[in-house]
Length: 106
Image (cartoon, rainbow, N blue to C red; front, side, top):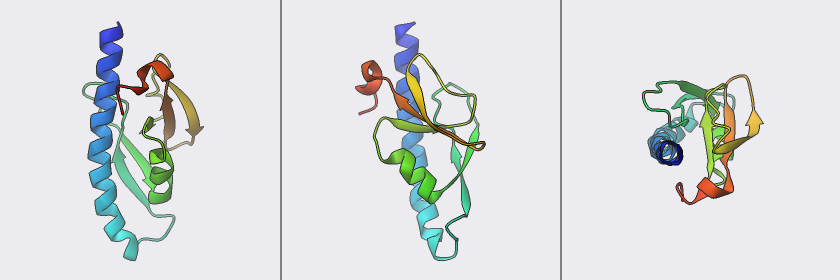
């Protein structure tokens, strides 16, 4: 079971890399996009095969990224074994890695 949880945490880190590239592209749209403009990000839940999308403004996504061990996931995709919810909205959930799994995403 521990191996599965470690793999999930590493998958979350990989999805964050994808979303960082998306955010960089979206920031170039900030010239025409208002502060309430929502962008589509890949769910960072780390579950193999998840193709969920999270709608967030750039400010919301940056808030999730303030800490290296926080991830944006689709509501319902939280993994209580490895993370705790720190913010919840109808469009997204921001989760924080539990201490024993932080080293996998740093």
